[in-house]
Length: 148
View 1 (cartoon, rainbow, N blue to C red):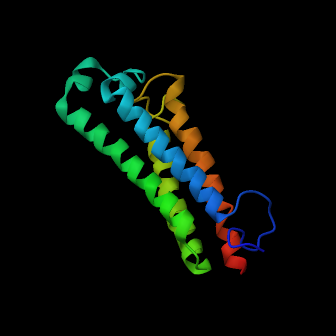
View 2 (cartoon, rainbow, N blue to C red):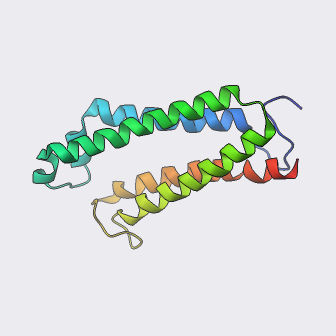
């Protein structure tokens, strides 16, 4: 068994690969939004023009996606350098909890029966779909570490 693959019954990427997938996803999504521009990217969700024009709103969204990039970098660094099974397990547990919280927030504001329609259009469910995939990747690692 290699360093990347803790004992687990399921097949799929190990800790390192999972962290790299999640980290790169977070960093690329955050960077893409910032490169596109906050006003341009959020206009796709039918954010009203007065809101888009607000420097407070642009600053808040800029902060959110800057945080997304930093979070991605944390995943990459931990994925590349964590060696302790205990650290890996707790990192997965804590980040799965955070990811679940982010999923609730994304779904809450989506234009779906589960959301309040704050953000409009079919694209408003994409953050929830991406968040669910990332959560499932993390959750499949948590029981593996508990069995060790």
